Amino acid sequence: MIELKNLDLRSDAAAQRVVKDETVNVDFAAASGELMSLEGPNRYAPGDALITGSTGDRWVVSRERFDAKYLPAAAGLAHGEPGAYRNRPAIVLARQMNE
Image (tube, rainbow, N blue to C red; front, side, top):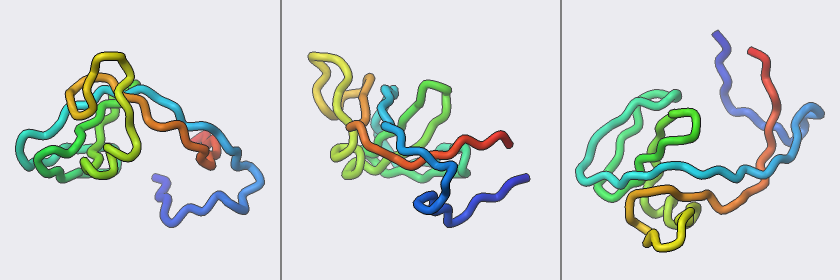
């Protein structure tokens, strides 16, 4: 098992700058709860975004962070309604790993 902690790709020659631009499906929590993500349990509060990515992975984003990072993907979808959202494109450092 590989354990990754405190990664810093800024000095990694194999890292590349890529634009993270994805559409996700979002529901908003009606009550507090917890969901299991690839990283482990994610607790959420009412109003937090419960996100499902294109590969079926699920995770939680606080409402404050969600509002700053995501926009409705379709015309007519009001911000804060469940549906498809796109992240605001952002440049991130990434490195392909084969394990």
